[in-house]
Length: 272
Image (cartoon, rainbow, N blue to C red; front, side):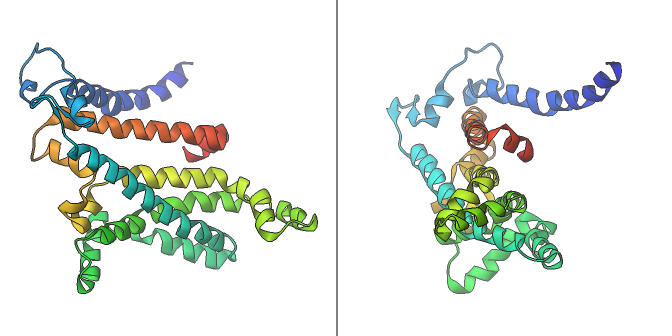
């Protein structure tokens, strides 16, 4: 028991010091106002949370700008994730069906961009897209999103495809099922944990990113990540930024809950 506590203790202290406490501090900030940060004993308020949903307590009116940013973030992240699914799902099968040597080469090509700093890779796209007059634009943002997050989708799907029992596909075909029906009945359910994990690992970072949209999209494609960055930086409105951050954190928790409901506890353990 003492050895177990000794092993568990350092990790627990690390999580408490660098995850739990900062999260609680940020939660406390979300119930203040920008002018209250340097003062003690001021009453808590819901102004920051009201602004998240579009109500400006200072002018006592509903403002739609923030809601438009949130909506734009959702559909940009959703469409980017859909593009990753359409490209990455067949790619995962293609890689998994290769011989060992070619498979290792393809996996290396998939992850080799991570050897370079992410910011440098995004700036490189400016040089690539500038001759086509695509920077800044929403199209460049989508391209940067897919480029950045496609490996996060392919790898968990590839892991599931590697474990597929292809005898189920053969059995379905022997029973007269069409190729599409045999795939949907025999193969697709086995890849569902990896598919859901890939969608979550793609959608959540795409929802909170600010680097890609800031560099490749400009101010016209500002997402919620850019809004949060601005609150903690130039605007200096930490309470509002904290409330927005907790909104994204809630999206993460909902995504993990959906994954656990869809793929089951076994798939959740594989993701962790």
